[in-house]
Length: 473
Image 1: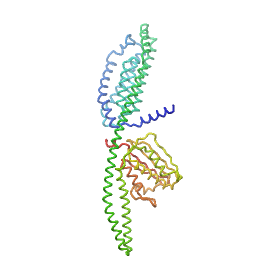
Image 2: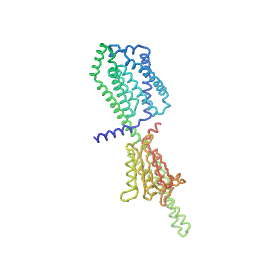
Image 3: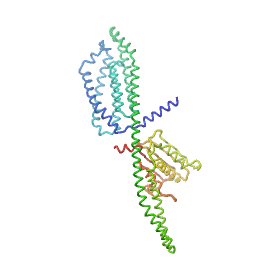
Image 4: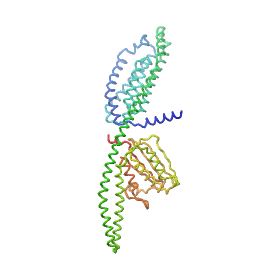
């Protein structure tokens, strides 16, 4: 039982983790609600207004379609339906106005508006069902159509299931309410009407209304299943395009880095050889020798920089992977704080259960985490607390926070920490945070820092899982 419950929870998290594409939301709402649904609403509103206010439909309404019923409970229902219709008409006018101006509304607001209107439609249809026979009402088929319409208009599976389950519940409650009204009417009916009512009750008892309700539920989950399959297919296609896009970015960056490194290493090699020859020739000139040593040191330093730059050329050698950010972060913790070292460091983890996957090279993401964790370890002198947080952000992104309990960074140095060769360590190269910034930004991400003296430092990295969404905008 626990296994089944866990599987259901995992399925629920999977369903809620799939976010609809804003462009797809607009397209589906425009086609279903504006192009098709709005004309249908206008026609239905006109017909209902005529039958409710201009015809004698309610006055000649018959119990079971055979015997006229002019009794207080039924009349009360008819009167309430008229007032409900007027309110529903006003809401439809407002909804139509929003649909006509949908280009000015954000996609998520548009989805919420349609979601609310779907629930209102279900409640109004339930009210009509009470007045037109309950479980035997021909409006049952409209409930089925409403479920299909909701599935088309709502691309978010969880919201779609909730709405269609409410539609099913509305039908069930409407049928039960009609049976209650029929029971109230019994004392007011004559013998002829009671015979007809008995026939109706008998028919309602044998009528497979449970089968009808089950069909509504089955239709609900079938539509949701189709939606999930389509969402997974779109997700797979989007990831394939994302892989290709990332690989093109890697190749372009790698070619540029290789070309720059090649162009600079040759003249530096010539300078280094000339300086070595000059040093060997004029050993007697102490001052000249010191200057030449300085030249060689700077050349060697430049050569290290170019060697690191050539490392970016290896972008073409690796490939983007579908990474679980929590696994990569845990591996980095294990490398920076190995158990054998016995550091007095407490690592606190706060990971969100369901996260979008990142399409990156594993070495790049691991290098980001190892640099930040290494800096935190050094700042705390290997003694303190590190808090790790991973959660999903806006626009299909993942937000990672790495906070330490170290001494913090002075305010005047914060703007410079991501600059190459700027360091506060005695033996630091000053490239660690520059690499963090570079490896984050080549994937369209950002890195921010917050620090207060005596209270520690927190680095926050935001990495998009899908750059195609931004490109589409």
